Image 1: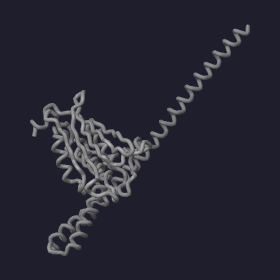
Image 2: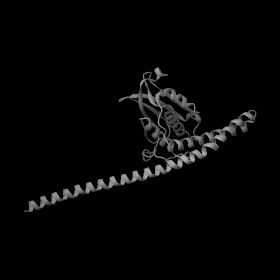
Image 3: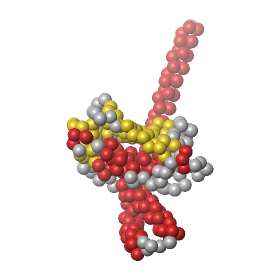
Image 4: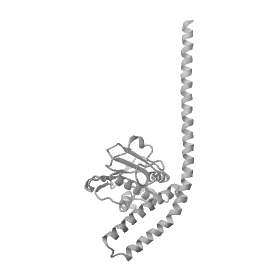
Length: 272
């Protein structure tokens, strides 16, 4: 009799433990679903706001750009101080235009116009657009057999520009000489499954472990400047082109961003 009681008790405890585990899993699932619903609602509202603000700011920024171009012509013989301030204005207007571009890209991603693009050429083009690379040692490695990516040139170009800009900014340290800012490493490689990968690494301070899951979320930023949309837009654009983006980092050891895209049927070098 005692054995039967013990067996019944054991079975009851197992059932309680099983049901408790199932209930816990169900509650966690509901919490995740609720968080995802709230996140989607926030993103929808943010997208509408971003689109409206972006369009409203684009026109005045265009006027400023034209005015600076005109001033650069009529003040070609201006003093060094005046030319310095004009350059500061150009830099800040350019930064504002990038923020507006991120807002518009986040609000509405256009259908990709895919073609065969050379990642090596695209990186070279976007490096020319990165501001303040003084003191940064840039290395690149693209195997001759690397196939091109089958993606939208403009959209992937924006992704590359965002990653290069972030990498350079991550190595900015006001207390360090410009000659020791760090190294920006760029590599291309083939992956299994007909994909190409672009790797962008820096030797900056790295990303804290608690921030790794947040860096691609809209409005998340640890920078003094910017609004935290660059990486969110980059992930959206990469996924729109059939790819993805992820990050690997340890504090004090820099960060590596990996962009994966579908490979084109023929090599980019042959198509170029």
